[in-house]
Image 1 (tube, one colour):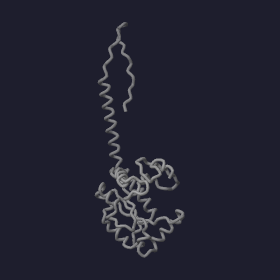
Image 2: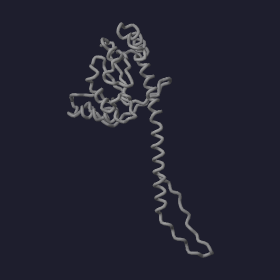
Image 3: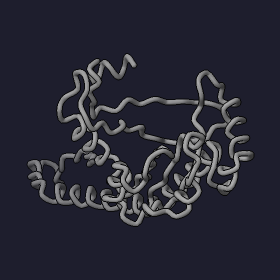
Image 4: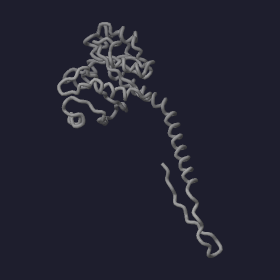
Length: 235
């Protein structure tokens, strides 16, 4: 909170400056995630009047790149097709091939959820994962046990395929998606590196070719002495 206030101020504003948080724990997945601000439609307290536009601009900056995976967090209580974050992700990912949806508050609104996540009216290409929110002071293991029981015993939620429920399933899915994206992007990254190296070498060659050839020193003993050229580093 202190770091957020130091960057964005204490008036609930937003900033494009990212806060980097490194969490290390044995046995947890290796993931890189960007937690973007939630969309605020109306400015409150000391927020600027264009707070909604600022937030949407930041979100678009991060979800537009082709190598980004878009994680839409949707409440089970809302209508998915009319959700603003869904509409924004569809602008930059029309096929949905890099969009994943996480559905929260499933215990609050279980009615019709099965149809929502299987019909896929909003074209979520990477699928849905339904999770139960942690309640109060629950420990992680307590929350996961309660979640497992919910999806196992609830008359409606138990009908959702087990590959689409729980936080552990979400974590594993994110790891697999990230690995797939890295594998897919690697050839292009290697090509860009090679192209830039080739460009740098070409620039270095042109610079070396355009350097005036030094004049020989006066001959005094039957041979011409040339000054030793210095090594140049090109970047």
